[in-house]
Image (cartoon, rainbow, N blue to C red; front, side, top):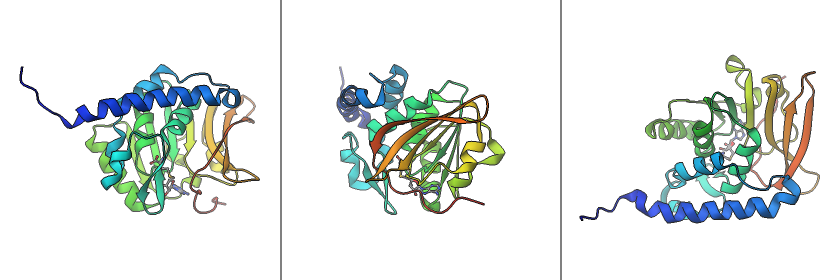
Length: 230
Ligand code: SAH
């Protein structure tokens, strides 16, 4: 039988090792997160999305390590465990509409697009927005819209959303994002801690419009740029 070496063949061991690391990270943080294990649907999405395609240049060889990596413009592609955890917290259904702030490389965007009906993603660095949009289109994602702008304002024309995810650290939850969250909607955001880094916060919109908040884990993200719209 003739053997053909395809580029994706070298991915498989990398992905499988990464998935095992994710399972272990979920176990090791369970006491704080109150989540014992990754949802199989989230793991399957992580298996399907080739992270090496989102890391520029020579950094791609590190794509299967459970670390953030530089993507240019002083920004980073998030750590896979944090991507999996934040995705799981959103509790997506196949028809969910998701707003993402901080497209960056588009990796988290692709994971969301695997699990949700529509993903609306905003990136403040125009060059990153452009390259992520092109990359996601090339990879065949048809349920994603990317635009460049200040994500603190959200995407009012596409609201309400079932889920909102912010992948940069903010001093507090931008009010526009709360307004654009539908009933029962879930918002995940790193909020600056009094100490170093941020607390990953899950906020769920209640029937009376208030938010029920829970701190999930200490995290370290790049800062959310700019100020809230007034
Ligand atoms: N989730 C992405 C990127 C994480 S880094 C990935 O894994 O690749 C955070 C991203 O948020 C950066 O690309 C940064 O440029 C972007 N960002 C920072 N402030 C923003 C703002 N106000 N609105 C939209 N994007 C913002």
